[in-house]
Amino acid sequence: MRFDVITLFPEMFSAIQDEGVIARGIKKSLLSINTWQLRDFSDNKHRNIDDKSYGGGAGMVMQVKPIRDCINKIKQCKPKTKVIYLSPQGKKLTHRLAKEISTLDSITLLCGRYEGVDERVIEHDVDMEISIGDYVISGGELAAMVLIDAVSRQIPGVLGNQDSLNDSFANGLLDYPHYTRPEEIDDQIVPEVLLSGHQANIDAWRQSQAIQNTQKKRKDLVEK
Ligand SMILES: C[S@@+](CC[C@H](N)C(=O)[O-])C[C@H]1O[C@@H](n2cnc3c(N)ncnc32)[C@H](O)[C@@H]1O
Picture 1 (tube, rainbow, N blue to C red):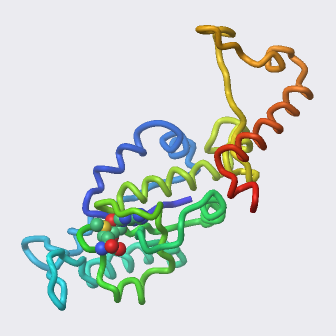
Picture 2 (cartoon, rainbow, N blue to C red):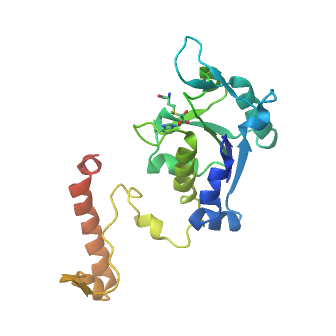
């Protein structure tokens, strides 16, 4: 899968490109991340891509032309790319949405700054707006990285094993509790069943713990 990212801060993406699960996915050629510096599409010597808001107000607005030119350039290589604008006004990112997106061949992520983008970009150039939650952050880059990570984990082969099958939300429940060595610390002990070596009992215990965990922490998921 190919991610194209339109941003004023391409260097931020080294945080996910150079380390961890995504870096491994890139090495295995299962995904690629191409960043595009929006200022390269500016038509003025100051490399500005934003201007004052019509109607007044403090914040600046990202202009249509550089964004449109950049998207068109990406579409020369990937004509069917789905253009996603990271926005607090978008559809909430969930496990299900990340999984749906992971089946696409190419997505383009538009990262806003300032007051966001000129509304005409959303009307004409954007296929979907996605939010990482009901709060406002200062730029779309962190949101894009969250999306790339959540989506990449769903691409077959990116994770080294099948453990993500039991991750929270994968089957509608939260994950079961995990323990590691030592068996005992400060009078806290690992549940006996996990030391039993009896896989069927362990699986049953984990399933019931996942249900209890979900009931305790996220009743809304159980009700669903
Ligand atoms: C300061 S915000 C602009 C917020 C905008 N004026 C509003 O209230 O809807 C700048 C950029 O950060 C990104 N952003 C902020 N909050 C986000 C969220 N919850 N999810 C995804 N992107 C977000 C968007 O790309 C946005 O254009």
